[in-house]
Length: 83
Image (cartoon, rainbow, N blue to C red; front, side, top):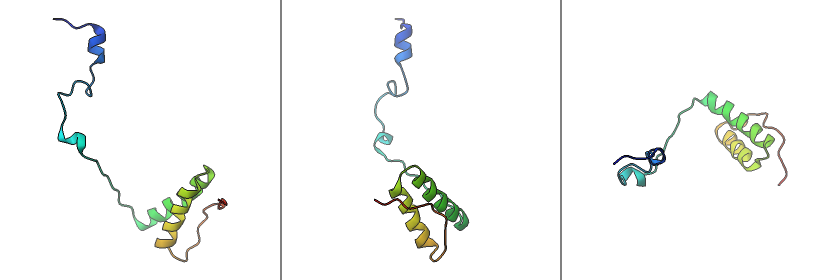
């Protein structure tokens, strides 16, 4: 029996996988490692970009991490938005 073009095009790995696998029920987790200097730079940039995009909660999370890991240091994190 031959398949039409549309029937062949409709088959994708999701629809033609042959059933479920244990991997369908597992959550994939990833993590990264950064140097102390990279964390300092990323935190400062994250705070500034988040504020520019109006995401003050994200900016404050970056502020909190900078204060936790680099206490007493001054950073240019942009102007805080009043909530």
